Length: 372
Image 1: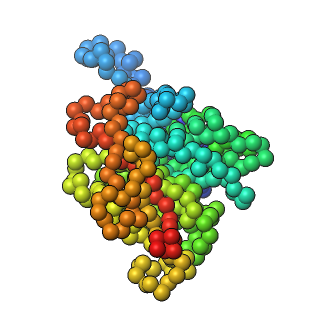
Image 2: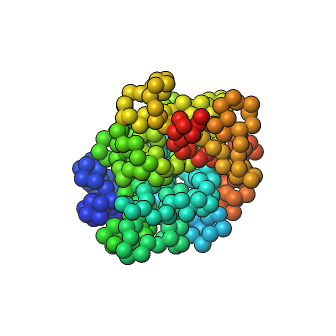
Image 3: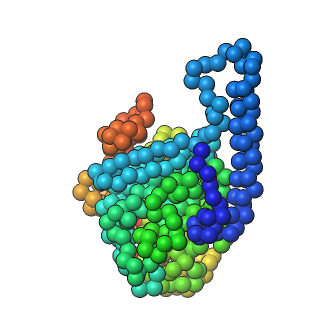
């Protein structure tokens, strides 16, 4: 089992002091438990009566270790190698690489120049919400290092990865980050700096910075230029909280990518509602009124979220559902990811054909003036 050096993670600013204080007692307890199990297993092996026990050939004294290291190569035909950790005890189905994660990688590959753009005041910043295995962020980091390494005089790009404030979820991500050759944040010549934040959607504190409420500039060093949401909308119960986090963290000049498949666990229309109804209904007033409900027509300078489908055959989606509000660019077209997942060795057996489709939407802020 890989070991976490929490002190080094704190020193390299991969985690904050608050995250360190939360993780430290949990990690120490886990290591104490594992040491107790190791000693017990060693005692059993040295037990002179052990031969009296019937053991299966594949019995493993380390069954308590729930983490597995995996490697994906040649994602979307690139030369990238992404190594990551899965933990069978992580929550929210976050220990599996869903095909929407790879669809997100496809989007990132096609739009990588957007993330690599230079800024005068700060490096570009990305954030993944509900990351799970964090494959899209790790892929982005690998591509950033491979093709867009920053010169010494420039600040490295910052890739922030977040998931629910559950020990196994964050532990899994930290192990993955520790395996990346770019994970040391102490090297100023590094193309990428990693940050890992525990974050429950809709709950905001200093562990996950967001755009300042009263700032109407198109860029803000406290927010993010890119927000990744990969296969996180399968449960409508969490849509509102997730959207709060997305809107809170996405810079006015930034973009988010929301990818998803229709898993059949709820009525499909409840999932479509997130991109077709809830996202376009989300507004942000430049005047800085935190409780603005989007209904005050006298409030000029309001920004609203817009969703545009990019998982199309020609990547140029237009509204085609006879919706009067054509600015929402609703277009239910997806990518069939079955062959792609087979090539990566990530096939899900018995999956219905329609469930192999991943739908990818690009989310941006647009002003009322642009909408009109």
